[in-house]
Amino acid sequence: MRLHTYISVKINQLNSYKSLIMKKILLSVLLLASINLATQAQAIPSFAFGLKGGLNLSKFSTNNTLSSDNQAGYLAGVWARVGALGFNFQPELYYSSKIATVTSGGETNTVKLNSIDVPLLFGMKVGTLGIGGRFYTGPVASFIINKDQSFGNAVGNVAKLNFKDQNHAWQFGAGADFTKFSVDLRYELGLTNLNGYDQKLNLFTLTAAYTIF
Image (tube, rainbow, N blue to C red; front, top):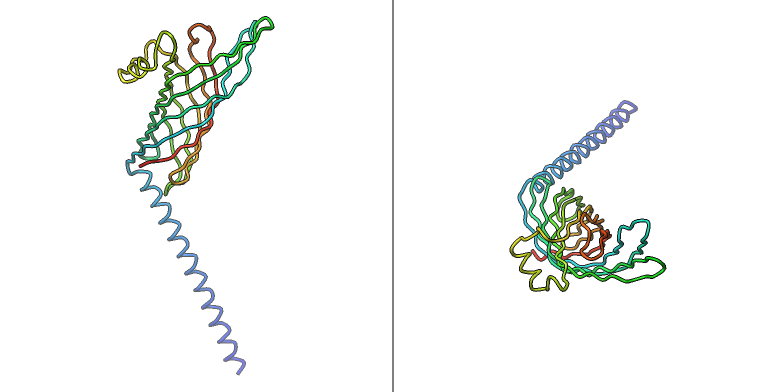
């Protein structure tokens, strides 16, 4: 009787051990399948297009005789993204209103700049199934709308890819994707002095975007 009980206990222990081994094997297979699926998803060429909008905080880089404070503006436009193997190229086109204050000799002036901005961003993406993160950097050309360049002329110069006489900057940023929605935070470093102000404009932007297709 004792021998029968002992054998039954050992058989139950063996069955439990086998069940545990099978669960570990199943989990390992599922993990490998998920990794393989994510790798294949990153390798497949992709294209996306959507709308975006948000806020910016602009501030002039200053010298010893000037000071500048951050002011809020806005932007709205479109974006596209082409990617494969975890890397992507993202051109954008948006209308931007930038505001900054400049103080000199105790006098403060508010400067408002409207422009059509064209960033050309290169970066990488992690994640799969529409959820993940992005990191990118690249140049941006600002087609300033003023007395020397109307809105129509700015649009024409964008279409002609006439970047020569425009203002230039460099963007650094990161974004998070949640299926069709995404948020991005960027810093834009001015590279050229703005005409009439002899100062470079730096800014932060926070945007939300929606993927149309």
